[in-house]
Image (cartoon, rainbow, N blue to C red; front, side, top):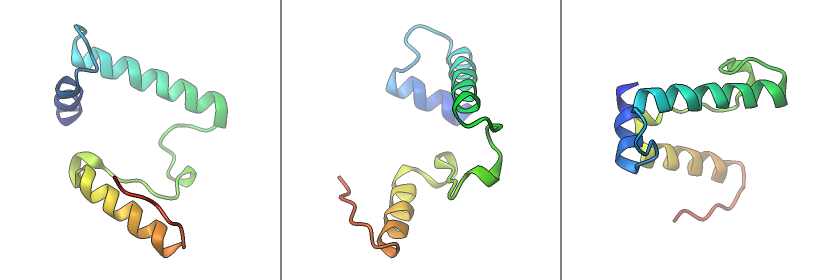
Amino acid sequence: MNLRTEHIQKLGLNGKENPRKYLTKMDNLRETYFKTYTKHELGTYHDYDLCLDTGTLGYDNCIEIITSLAKQQGLNLKHQ
């Protein structure tokens, strides 16, 4: 969770709230939303076509991977 706390602090998303507390709150909200609308458990790999760890790969590499896969599928994406 250290990379995530650093990232939200860098972006200023947590305001004055403790970064770990903020992440826990957001994770719980995300999980509730997911369960409500999909009726599945969050994190079940069967629900995903692709899962990338931006903390390990970095955002630029994830963008390149997604863009490459989209091109292979014949999609025309504009990368900014």
